[in-house]
Amino acid sequence: MKDIFPMVEIERKTRETEVRLKINLWGSGNTDIDTGIGFFNHMLELFAYHGFIDLALNVKGDLYVDEHHTVEDVGIVLGQAISKALGERKGIRRYGDVTLPMDETLVQVVLDLGGRPYYQDNLEFSREMVGDLPVELVEEFFRSLSNNAGMNLHILMHRGGNNHHLLEACFKALGRALDQALTIEDRLGDSPLSTKGSL
Image (cartoon, rainbow, N blue to C red; front, side, top):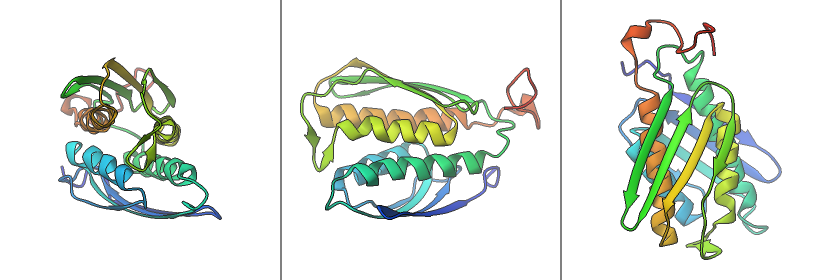
């Protein structure tokens, strides 16, 4: 089972960022992450740990401008890596649905790895920054991830509160939902979960 998803390495270099990423979707939750944004590192570590994903990520971004390019480009590269690892997306359960509490907050993440990107959320924040991460960039990250992974992703805030707790719930639930969707369904054999026969 451990080789069902190949280890993927991607490098992306632009005038704004240089991103190096290595991912194993069927891992143990080991991480080595440095984006230059401390709180973003923490969220990505939670995502990987709770999704049993091995993730090595190093980013050199134009943080002297602002955090936008770094956060968006991480979403792009992470999404591309997930899509590449999935290949033809055969044999997986495809869907994930996890509702997760973090203290007073409650978040639900629902996703479909069917290859058609879409992103929607109803997140509400009470401040502009959590640590060194502007909260307006959270949507940019998730949308970039969805578009490049071929993932339909919905994040529903059932109950808000402390912004740190809210974001923690989002990233942990994303990891859990992705792990659920990646589960091998033996009854599918070497087929995708689609009546069309392909995704």
